[in-house]
Amino acid sequence: MSLREAASETAAARGPRSAPHADSGRARLRPAPVRPRGSVVAAVDIGTSKICCFIARVEAEGPRILGIGHQVSRGVRGGTIVNLEAAGESIRNAVHAAEQMAGETIERVVINLSGGFPASRIVNAEIGIAGREVTDADMHEVLERGYQMRESDDSQVIHSIPVGFSIDGSRGIRDPRGMVGERLGVNMHLVTAATASVRNHSAVIGRAHLAVDALVASPYAAGLACLVEDEMALGVTVIDMGGGTTTIGVFFDGNMIFADTVPIGGGHVTNDIARGLSTPLAHAERLKALFGSAIAATRDEREMIAVPQIGEEEDGHVNHVPKSLLVSIVAPRVEETFEFVRNRLEVAGFDKVAGRRVVLTGGACQLHGVRELAAVILDKQVRIGRPLRIAGLAEATHGPAFSTTAGLLHFAVSERAETPRPRRAAAGGVLGRVSQWLRENL
Image 1 (cartoon, helix red, strand yellow):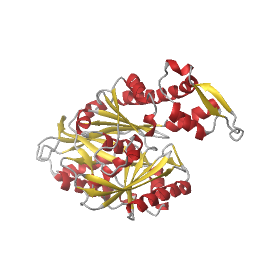
Image 2 (image 1 turned 120 degrees about the vertical axis):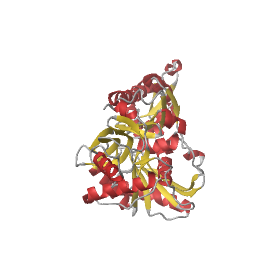
Image 3 (image 1 turned 90 degrees about the horizontal axis):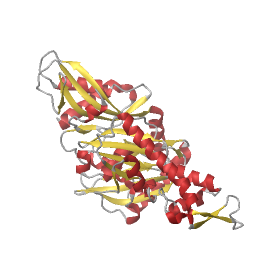
Image 4 (image 1 turned 180 degrees about the horizontal axis):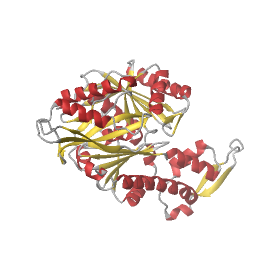
């Protein structure tokens, strides 16, 4: 079965959420259980350019922010941990600032994974039922078989989302129990990550004296924060443009049906500017924010900008270059990013399933002209996504750069945490998760 055919089936929503040693996706046929009102939840966005912590209280309308802390990220490159001590210190500082502001002490956090995971895939699992009615035991068996269909033992399932059951090839069935047939099948959307990457994220949170409540793919969190219900139902692509990576999430019929990552982010644009204009990285970031653009304008040739030179800052020596030179450095890298995104969607077969709607979010999407360039390259309608349905966010933290952190809070509020399980209990853990899913959702 093709990915496009599988994505067109009726999708059940997200599945049982858990700590990193279990899958974080849940097939949901009813609204997910929520945390008790008044309880406190926390989320940490581990990014390449910044570490951000939100602490919120659960209210009837959703999470209300109590405290915010963010720090420059150290020890993270391309969404993966490269220095445990440096990354742990950045996380500790961000969490401490949020705790001081909230007046609360947290012990567990929901975190994101923005690198170290390959393109997700939809797998098909089938079992024989010999012409009898489908029972709960059959559901256990087919869901377990689908869950176990990961690519290798070196990968770990982050989300496992059933996107439709089938009986003897008749697809699009939401609840097959009681139906009669020869073969029961399920199509599952699996998001996996390298086991080493998952363990390193758990270890770095441990360095901050915290425990991981759940691990969530960044595009999933960004979608939960930025998308409205109609977009999720009709089809939309979320592009989260971070500092070190650009992650992609396709949502259809209320579920995420595809996820991927491109190893290019806003930090690469900054490095290109620093190299191309021989200026320090701090000045390159400033030039990008103040004068950078992804689309050239006729007046760029006439507008001159001052560029401090590496090693000559104290002497006050600067070069004056036309803005067009800066744009000629920025635009190709942004264009390359969207071409990668377009190619990944076409190869996976989701360029049409996602419809004509794209939502850009993440700090790098704030660069001037990015929205317009994305619309041209992707040939879709594009908007900038900001956190929705979350109270207490100040204007400075209500922008696209904080979408993933806000989405992690939505995930924490709308899903139920499980106790972490060791990997050695794989079979029992799977059956336990399937049992819980059946009890709560079918």
